[in-house]
Amino acid sequence: MMGFTPIGSTLGGLVLGVAISLMILFDGRITGISGILGRSWGARGSDLAWRLYFLGGLAVGGLLWRLVSPGVFGPASSTGLATTAIGGFLVGVGTTLGNGCTSGHGLCGISRLSPRSIVATLVFVATGMLTVAVTRGRL
Amino acid sequence: MSNENKKNAVAALCGLLFALGLGLGGMTNPLKVQAFLDVLGKWDPSLMFVMGGGIAVGFWTFRAAKRRAHPFLGGDFGWPNATRIDARLVVGAAIFGVGWGLTGYCPGPALVALGAGRIGAAVAVSSMVLGMLATRAGTRRRSRAA
Image (tube, rainbow over all chains, first blue to last red; front, side, top):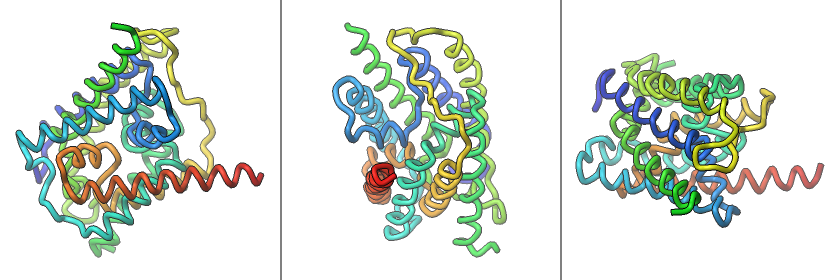
């Protein structure tokens, strides 16, 4: 999976495109994973149900990948757990403040040409690049 | 089957499809994500093709959705109502990007890898949820004070 994979990545993107399309056309929902996860707390009834079904589908998909092709997850310990914990916390804070992540802003927001999402995507890709440049000593 | 059950079935199917797409596209491998962000090193632009493929489909279907009054399964569209590009959006996105670069996990792939039983993903998701809840509690307190 390492190295340039334009065909596999385009295929993967098309599948993601189908998923966000079914969600908006049938359910009327934006597929923004950080929002689906974060707003599960405090949600109840039907608003909680669809979130859990979606998140369950994601997790079951992960289990299927593990059975069929565990290589898609990369090597087991590429990042230290302390770094992962700090990074994960920042992802939680940032997506809550900024109201979205790679799916909600990057895929859905750009698809509907939302200026907020276009700005958000440019910003998080830029700070992501800057972070990797710093941690890998490129600067 | 009631429309609500059908909506839940669509959500479960889409979660599954989303996991399929993320895995195919290379997003579930943190090293590949970091290679995309490593523009000054050995840059792997693959993830631009993931975004491109998704938007190529989404652009048309979101246009179609915007022309409709209701989704196919009834109820209302949950269109976002925020339009202002404010400091909160920019600062939030900037913080998210730092976390994304550190871990190589954004929320979707982290949940997929959690389903596969990856320890790193379990740590990433639990601290992510902690960050989400802490931020919500903080902004609630600030809006009460204001």
